[in-house]
Length: 264
Image 1 (cartoon, rainbow, N blue to C red):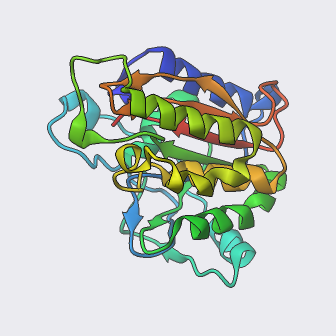
Image 2: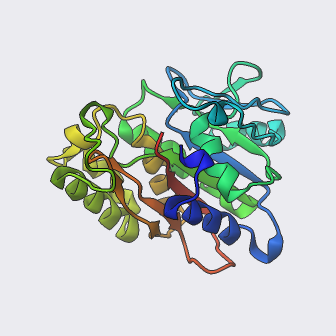
């Protein structure tokens, strides 16, 4: 619902869009890792005009009416496949598009949809460190004007939501989220240690929502930068809403990387 609401989280995403648009110059493109393209292979969207996917049910019609008409960037996909070789990445020309993990954030950060977007699928067959290594291989994109963004939640356990705790986090959720923030703001290369945290199984019952932060960490670590928190918070006891940005918060941010948390 944050896609169509205005609150402190969406304000932070709008701020991220301003930061990565120095002197009103948009980035060349955005590579987005969304929790919602979680498949058994590595792939990227490679169509000229990715469709807006409404990959949910039971929500108000207002959400289903949202369209995010950004361009794709097939040439960038070719560039990435060469950059990360011998890691294989497939090219999706017609199966996926821009899912709600992507457009729910980008319609605030880049409301005019004037920056090309490609999604990078999360391969569920790969371990945590393999995702980190792939992210480090993508680091040269920063010098080519490309933003890497991740959309998920560092803490995401829908099975134990407590609707009486609308803006609160359980103790275990706070412990894990704060441990992740400490790593991302000091030494992102340590992100792969979090699977040994005592609260990992509660915070990350499935890895799909956590792995976008691993890509963010790998990208930042390879560029020798750390993250800063733009906004923090919790919802329903078992969701964290932390959003971070790599590098300085000045308008001349370089290198460029984002990690967004979206409630979905």
